[in-house]
Length: 186
Image: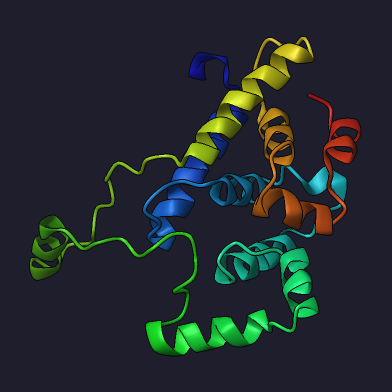
């Protein structure tokens, strides 16, 4: 499948891995694919504010993946999600509810630090089931549109076709499957 990826799509995947490594995530998730697409400027033609989308995505991760709609639904039941997150973070540290936990320090990390060398982050970072599904779906979307290669637009459409934090944050910023499909040429 990866032989069908354009250079831009490959850059998105490697960018997602870099995002996961940078944040210390245990796996590459859909949010990392979205952050890589943002960093590449793939959503710029749609008038998307990169920093606002990234900030909203970070806020969603901080809430343990719960969307604003989830937060509003809980508020309707008298549950203050912000208060719950604050209390959990007081007890367990900032970001305790985020989907990706911190990376464990390895013996190699300790040796490099002792020798005064920079940490070489070459560790394998697996993809979550959701991220794998996005990659598979991007192929189906490309084939369905009659495209021979998988580009960043196909990855974006695949992200938007799945429920979750990435598609919800994008929808909050006016980016839906239909707006992306009509606003971006493959």
